[in-house]
Image (cartoon, rainbow, N blue to C red; front, side):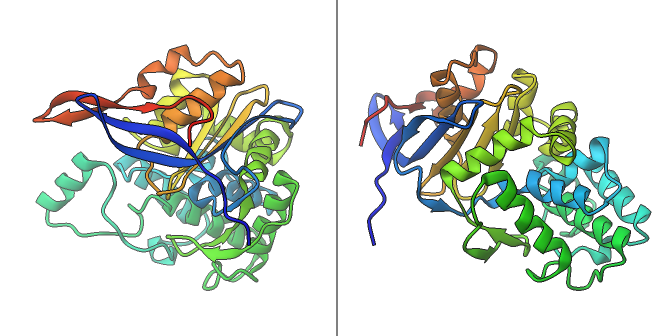
Length: 318
């Protein structure tokens, strides 16, 4: 078995001293799906984690789930558990004739810290509906209800809905998804090469039907893809027409309206530099990322004040 080759994609600089380095891979595609930018091993298989969610939402739509607008955006997103997110998830479930107890994602605190602190003060505990994947799970349950499929095993890889997810992933990426793993929320997770993941993003923004519907919902309702101050939400707000989605373990994808797409994998799993890395890659493709420049600046703090930064590195650094 060959060993993947990674590049240094970002450095953590504290008081002019390079304290840490983030290795990984990045691929950039032109609208014709041609590979025009590479760093590291872009043919290595990765687990896409939550960057899979837009395609899971496409599968829900293709299976007949009655999702649109903010409901479709949250099905494709990793929300921060704010009250407006919870209301939307509960509405999806209610229209499917289900309650929050049908969700099979694990209970967690919301990622939004003010919301979490308020719930703790009120004596409330963790819940499934506040979990960042509950929108995706609600969308899956809506698809099951629309087809009369069983809901108690909707996360089984052999369930009709999950077979549709695998089909959509393969169709969008132009390759056979493999391996099949289990995501942090319990849903099946289908591996793709980093280049295949970027191809899937080109498909998302260029294809018609359910693909276009999901891309449009994410762009129109970015606060349902992430939440207040979330990097993915701000990415799409600052670069109108772009679709951006991060995932756990240092994965992030982004695509412009015309089909320039990038996929990032930081091999140590840290997400702290992935947005800046993706912006650098898009700029290398000729995309004007100037409006999103603030997202490319990640300060390093000392005593509560900036003493350095996490900065992306030039191409070819190993």
